[in-house]
Picture 1 (spheres, rainbow, N blue to C red):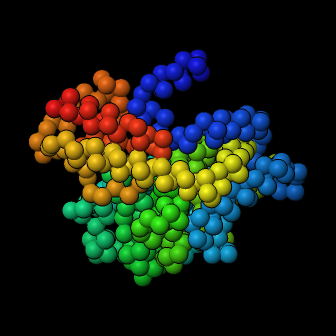
Picture 2: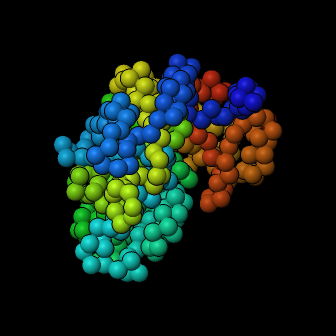
Picture 3: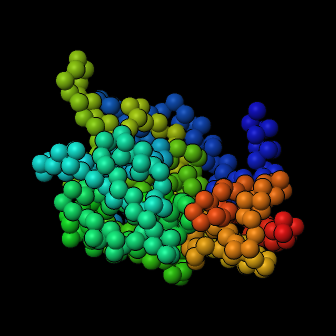
Amino acid sequence: MAAEDAATVSDVKFGRRFFGGDEPFQLAAYAYGLFAQSTRASLYPGLPGPAHVEGMHREVVSFALAMMRAPPEGTGVMTSGGTESVILALRAAVARARSRGLAPQDMEIIASRSAHPCIDKAAELCNVRLRRIPVDPGHVADVERIRGLISRRTILLYASFPSYAYGLVDDVARLAEIAATADSWLHVDACMSGLLAPFCRLNGEPVPPFDFSIPGVASISADLHKHGYSAKGASVLLFRSGELGRWAPFEYADHPLPPMRTPTLAGTAPGAPVASAWAVIQLLGINGYRALAAALTRTRSAMVEAIRAVEGFNVLGDPPFSIVVITSDVHDVESVREHLTRKGWFTLRVLEPNGIHLNVGACDEALAPILEADLRAAV
């Protein structure tokens, strides 16, 4: 079954959406298998836990904190993915607001229309009102409108870097300024770029500030199973300080067993994703990630040129990372997308504005002329 699935995906253009080459791909799976029956840590303080898994966990989090330019007091935890990271970030913001006397029914979140739906899921689970704000003409967060809406009820602002919908980045620095003025929590969803943007910056690319180098950023989520190239089920939630991070874990003592403390949503946090992420980080290192980031930059540039080479097509904004949205004022983009699907492309439909969502990879540069030819054929 695995062989059949792999054969199917290999025929789909962009089917291997986060692929950094055969060696990291195979190592990620191998390391995962070695620790398939491991948990991350004992649920009960004082009982022995898996020391090697815990050690790898600390090193992965430390690596991510360094890439996000965290202060010495920064802390974090690995989660199963970006959605869990966002849920835990909101849980922490809710717990902190509750400690300051704010009732849950008086709390609210402000997020842009372009924010990932995981914030809706988090708001529903935490029973907090979410206010979604229309994007500005550039299809990113409307900072000035948000400035006019923030209040003492606003316990969390949500910034996308980039948004999954458009691949464009919110102005994190200005949102951080607003959050700091209101003493609100700013969470930066960098799930798509957290293991990409720092290496683009090291390569000399112009990357806007988005990390803990901005004083008002409270937490950041970044997916290791995207441009970190680990096996699925690996993300990090990072906090500026242990003081902020202490609000996220779940603790309970009033039952027949010793006190339970879980840092993530899952009662049993698996060790396998930790081992997979750790192994790939050891393999690639800073230089390996920089090389893959450079390859992805070349790929994105080639794709953008290919799209614009076909009359009537353009891209939305100036995409800085892996997501490119094809737009057109001339062609029926949904019919074009259906044509691309028949040609073996994996794309998503963008509804506002009408567009075709591409998620390009570091190894996809050779697909650019094929995309251009298929767009011409669609026309």
